[in-house]
Amino acid sequence: MRSLKTIIIDDEIDCVKLLSLELKKFPQVILKATYTDPLIALEEIELIQPDLLFLDIEMPVMSGFELIEKIKHLNINIVFVTAYNQF
Image (tube, rainbow, N blue to C red):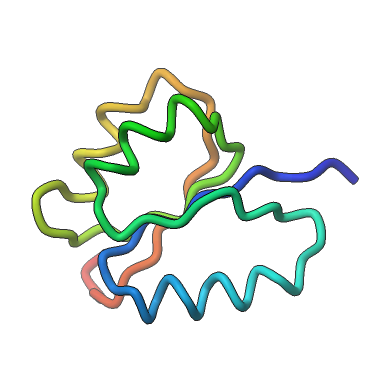
């Protein structure tokens, strides 16, 4: 089974920690980085070239949807993580 380079972007550090812990259950998921600031993450995504992105929707400065618009040229699978029922 091929490994999946993975990034987590969520402004809530507790959510990042919990998801990071849960992902350890899956040996094919290689967690390359976590970010609580979407602007910093945006700078790094091009360098890391992840296969999988766990992305919060509601974040300060830039929403998850705005971030996607900036990286849509990349081939990345995205899983939204959010506490908001409307999403």
